[in-house]
Image 1: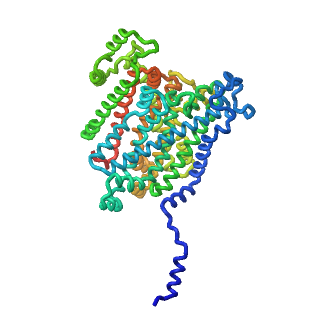
Image 2 (image 1 turned 90 degrees about the vertical axis):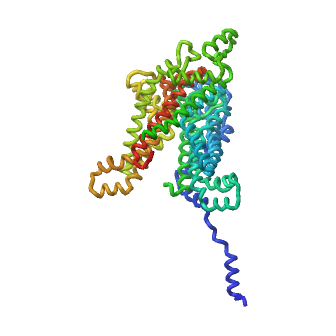
Image 3 (image 1 turned 180 degrees about the vertical axis):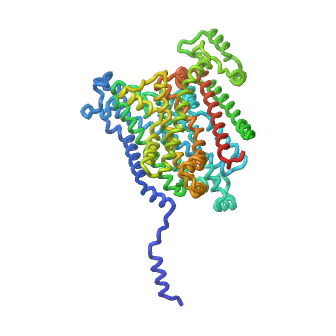
Length: 307
Length: 305
């Protein structure tokens, strides 16, 4: 009864490798790879990251050692040189600027990533909850965000740092306190457009509790937008930290950051020690550039209609 | 319109009160009092000082007094570090300076940014466009605390054209204004360019061109107004960042504005001055965002208030 020829063709058909579907993520990856500026920036970021992690292994001097031969005469003897191992020169205390820059890069990148990380977690949950629950709760939650946004946060942050003492954890807390506001607004907007879709309705109809709908169905669908804004947040966090450190209110010696190094370099440049400004500024600028370009590239890749 | 302003004020005033109370509580929570010194004061002296500044009152009474002083008499109380100066005097000394260069920087940033953005949009893909886009990308990584040293390096140390700091005639205004304005000018140029490009592609512009209006009238009368809406909504955040940036300008150029007083008081733990300036800046921010909202509602006929 069974047509063996048809069976054979069916078997052959089944034996063929399945045509692979392209997921939206694979599409996005392809679009991102085609964006040259973003790819170059990604390489730059990887290099800066490697510099932060392995830079101290390359350094001839540690960041705390003082070169007494140079101390006090940085303008004459402290210039960058291969022969004495100060690749980026030294500061006026004879400390090796290469090691200091490595350390500053570590601190600044860490502040940027942790600040953006806090923003992602808090902002996503807050925004998704407000958007999903809706109604009066939403009104109150977003009004609170409006109120917080109209506060001059840099002044409040400095107030916090002075009142509770300047420490890394306070800096993280202070930057984290304000960084999530924009994120929560963006996430709320996305959630509002998601929550009436059929798959959410289906989840609700089968009795999934609200918190699980938010975590399992809403949040994963927000990841594209969140990834884009998180990438753009990192440079903003680095800018905030550098701003505060430039004023001398951020990270304290012996720790250092790009802002603190730039501040030091800017203060001493009229003695002719220009390298103290140039090297930290170079790393600061290329990293910010790279983050902005990667963020733009991600936006184009993940959200192609938003052009 | 009137109701709209009233409703906005109904949000603005509690916000401001919240800011005052929160910063007061922060100050209160600080470890050590304002008179804690390395050498402990005799208890009687400390008690007298506390009585003089009203610090022995219950907390709620202090808050009420403080808020009442600000609301009724516009009085931020005395400085804790300089007994002969009140917070009002310190603010009054620095505020005109900040207002001068801040105001000029604001006008320059908006004027240059909008012109650059419009010029780039009407000649899309010309050298003008590339210049505008290049400048605005470059300025993204040149915040005021990077611009300030670079300007001093070039114009004071290398060329010797401009004084590196201090406050006097208009020569002293140039570098603070440029350092403060660059970042905003670039952002405004970018926003103007993209919104102008969008408006220029819309139907009403095609109609205006089709009925034979001269290009100048099309741009100035029909395209510019709708294209300004995103720029106006950016002015609120721009104002906040600008007034924050004035701290760096005051520190770096020794211009003597309120930013300097703020950082000095932060380093001296002069809480009364810090709070006074924070509250003043907060009030200005809230007022400014109110003005921006009203302006927006006035320009955009689609907004119902």
